[in-house]
Image (tube, rainbow, N blue to C red; front, side, top):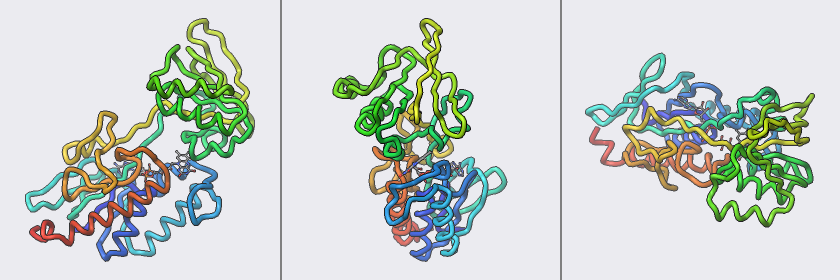
Length: 308
Ligand SMILES: Cc1cc2nc3c(=O)[nH]c(=O)nc-3n(C[C@H](O)[C@H](O)[C@H](O)COP(=O)(O)OP(=O)(O)OC[C@H]3O[C@@H](n4cnc5c(N)ncnc54)[C@H](O)[C@@H]3O)c2cc1C
């Protein structure tokens, strides 16, 4: 029986493990893919305080070392279900086994929807980005395209217009899904060119991305946008279905919790990109990890858990 099982070893889960171990709790961290999470896709991270610019892989290695040195246990496995037992402990089922804990921290992050066009995989981190706030500064005075038609895409285009020379906003329809007041913000951005009714069909380049080929859906014509970067903003996919009976999910599938990282269940906490929040970044994921771990430790030390 562990004090805390943390599901997901991205920056949120790893930080939660640091706080829980330093509070003397036993911790099992279960990760299905890559220790470090999404940030391992980034070749260059410049906005993480106290760290010199480095790759996401390097940053993750430092964080994983810190967690291992503090004595957290780890499993590489996929959590498929979490159920509460009669004694108020939890059974965490994975593809290959099951584990038990007094409290759970869910830190499963999210995946960004991909364009699904040739060349995309090759240029992720070398011209293709999923985060304007993270990578916008690398495109000062350059030409970029944003793909998408919702609030995030339009807000990204507006944000990037203050840094880049030219921003193409590529959207598959003639009208944006984004809120009207957000779309109105585009009128103050003369360097944003709308490329409507158009879908990306290929990302091209040698060592770095140089061209985004788009096709007009109305006339079938292809256009070559010469770009230094493409920001993909066509949606995010949290994967919290396995926890839907324990916690509340919002309509997009994010776990409902406030800044305290507490869910509706007193022994289940949530940290990082998988929860409802405005800003999904390393610093907010790490902050959540600390907050969730402190809350979980408080729960374990409380009379509520002692009754177990
Ligand atoms: C290309 C890219 C570049 C970025 N650059 C920056 C940047 O420069 N600066 C910045 O601040 N932010 C950046 N971000 C955003 C940042 O990486 C995320 O905000 C941060 O990683 C969120 O951390 P997290 O721990 O909440 O989730 P994640 O990093 O998504 O980690 C969640 C982990 O949970 C695991 N998991 C999911 N489901 C299960 C399951 N059922 N069982 C077991 N494990 C599971 C996943 O495999 C994953 O490893 C970038 C993101 C991307 C994609």
